[in-house]
Image (cartoon, rainbow, N blue to C red):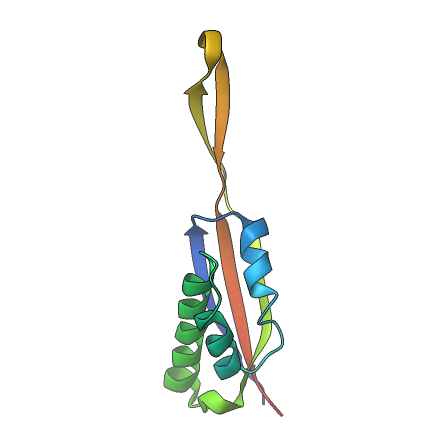
Length: 113
């Protein structure tokens, strides 16, 4: 029986578009190999995604008794979170919106057959 082990990170202060560039590197890879890839990736999103995958691995070991060497990144995706709209004032008193985009990241690990 295969278990879906999930971990979620909400309101990560990076846009979903930039986060997807990082998570595309590890989709479908073995979990331990994914951690190695993310450890050497220089993007801002790499460290939180690495911590999230490590958390999912810990969930698998603690709750389901699955070995970390048998886990694969089955699904990983980044959704848009609510955008924070700030006011910034430009030249001649005009109003310029400043959009602070955030994302929700979800990782699902599965045991290899």
